[in-house]
Length: 80
Image 1: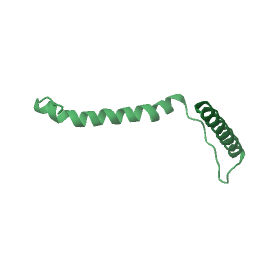
Image 2: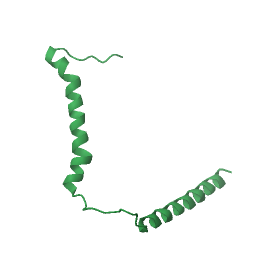
Image 3: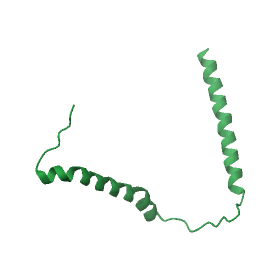
Image 4: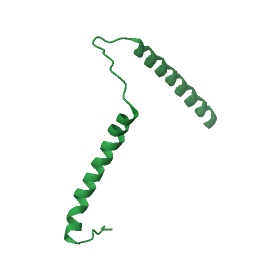
């Protein structure tokens, strides 16, 4: 019983994946009105946007959270 369920699930996923890949390939071939592809992004620009900016925001938030306690000379305690 369990083996037949695995086979059925595998076949269903394979058919779904095949249908999904076919539709995405067909959608890329259609030119949309007003479609004006620009220049590609360089590696540095990609790293800045998707890694640098989020990292900078996390650092700013961490400073905003811990700075008041450090300025007062208190240690933050985690409540259990």
